[in-house]
Length: 127
Image 1 (tube, one colour):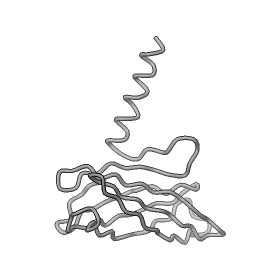
Image 2 (cartoon, helix red, strand yellow):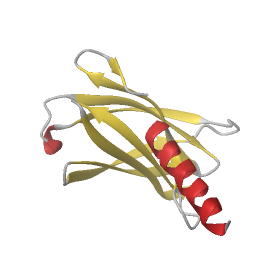
Image 3 (cartoon, one colour):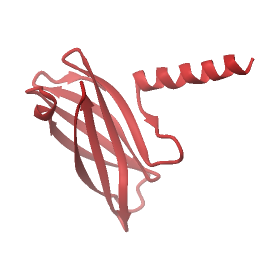
Image 4 (cartoon, helix red, strand yellow):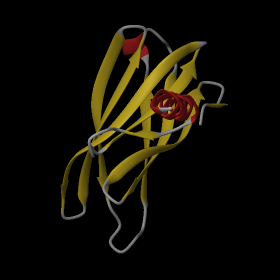
C-alpha cells in the first residue's frame, strides 16, 4: 500500500512539473516551470535570493539540452500589495535559440512565480 501512495505522490509531482509551477523541496524559495521552446523542453527556475525592505532579488535560471544560464531580476515590492509583478525579456541565445522569452514574474509571500510567458517573435503563449 505504501508503494501505491508513493507512486501516486510521484505521479502528482511529475504532472505538476509538466503543467505549471512547482515549489522546491525543503522550504526553499524557488519555483520551477517546464516550457516547450522550439519543440524542446526548457526548465525555468525562479529563486528569491535576497529581500530587504521592499527590494527583492530573484535569480532566474534557464536550462535546455545540457546548457543553462542564470541572471537576476530586481523587483521593488509595492508596499501593502498582496502581489507585485515584474516583466522581463530573456534572450535565449545562450541555449542555442535566436528567440526570447517575454515573462511576467509575480512576487507574493516571499516566493517568485512565473505567471505568463510568451516566446518571441510570434508571441507564442507558453504559459
